[in-house]
Length: 174
Image (cartoon, rainbow, N blue to C red; front, side, top):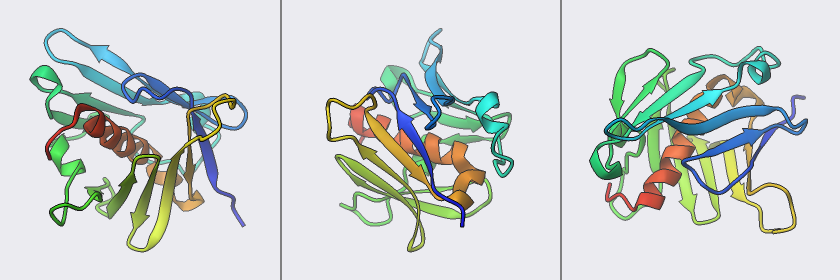
């Protein structure tokens, strides 16, 4: 039986962070790629880490192009089509804290949000869980636990998680 993948988020800032695996390998980095007029963030799946996981599919990068004053802009996975950020933050019912996104495999996923924990769901099946570490003496800010079968869409999971956290931080009305 395959075990869950756990990535450790180094710092709280959703705009500049990284995720490491249990061996200390950097799995993802989140950093500013450009600021010529508006902010562009790049979420990079690190090649050295990805080579150890044959089931990973899809692009190794996602770019988040923000609008003026860090307003909602667009997402581009690799060299794929441009999608508006709102499509990755869909709300099905007014007042709900759940946000929906469609992965490149055309499947629909839902993030259930609370201030210290987010759960990514495929219907009723858990895909990933992100949790803030309650112990300030531990070396990481949060953990992201991903089901083995979901490693194929890990870039989209990290990107949608990051975008949800950014939207909350920026207090977007979406």
